[in-house]
Length: 532
Figure 1: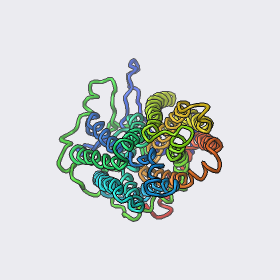
Figure 2: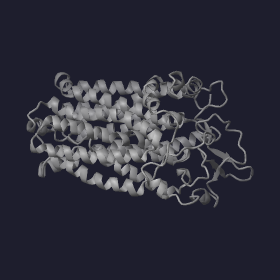
Figure 3: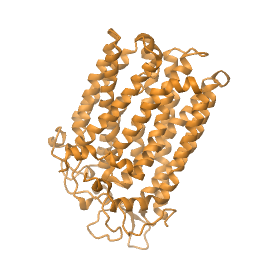
């Protein structure tokens, strides 16, 4: 039992890898980092590209993801105005967000198998074009205030968002070695879930000064720039790597290092050689929409793969940890306009939108904690474990997630229900804590799935997207009914208690995670359902 993780009978378990190797020279304290997975000699292999180039690609993907995710909270500050303009109920206004989230879930089912078969580049390009078209469509509905047209524009916006929500985390696995992923996974998650909280701040000002429809038009305009970045600067990152080099998936003995193992001495000048591209990585082939199949597996089998994975303990845990906390933030976004636009504060759209500044600050706090905490704890645990990395080390990030989530949900419910007594600032502080916990929880779950089950990582991320968006759909659908019938304080105390219970599930996941990895490697759900 290493560091509280129960050991299975099998000696070698997928996901467990030796990531550091002490020099044979006993007088030297230097360590070499083992590159996992192993790079090939192909210049088209992203792992052969210089780190700065891979970071630029990730930054571009994250920038476009931020632009795409602005569509989800686009109506947060305007829901009351839209209900009046479209002559609909508050519930109908909430459905504009609910069906948008449903569109994300449905779109993920389509785009993920396309990405598995043909690569991710063309999927990102299609998503960008759909976002441009649907945003222009949504903005044009102000000319006739056709609710049905607006609803379908929101659904298509959700479908357009799906490639970014479901594939960005997987791109981190494509671009980086295991020891490089931690902070970059946190950065990717804050771009997906944190950056969107700055949207209502601008949307409120736009709606108050030039009209709500310009929020849609601005997304279309900036997404056009994002499309050009993807088209000219973001090559294909999916790579068909030989199975023998996927050392974080295969059950090769971590002790059986031979001269062909790729070692990276962090203190040696030779380290610069390993980050040098072996050839010209910016080949025209890499910038084409398609550059060949990435797998020989059937599209329809890949389409069906996520569904049996809902029986996988790690996927269930990740869905609950990530999807539920994101759902709470969606719930806050739906009802925030009621809290501030209505009595006793009677804020306008611009003032209500500015209330999301705290949420954005919370996302940055979550990014910093997730990146630094994960890096420090993982390094510490690896050293204590004699250089061997266990994916369960990523679960330790749930500790600050629990602290921030519980205090944020309980505190927000109590103070928002007594807004006259506590004022606007105190609920904002607790909202920042909720969003910080969301970024940390999303990072912990995504990192664990990527490192523990990289062979099913994309399908697992699809499960996360489906669960998260269906759960958020339910919350958005019933948000106003629950608030008006049960009250904000009671509602968020229930939410906080549920979140504490979900975070508590991380303890058995940490202890039994390695046994689970071994069991489901030997009893592959996809093989049982004949999908592999």
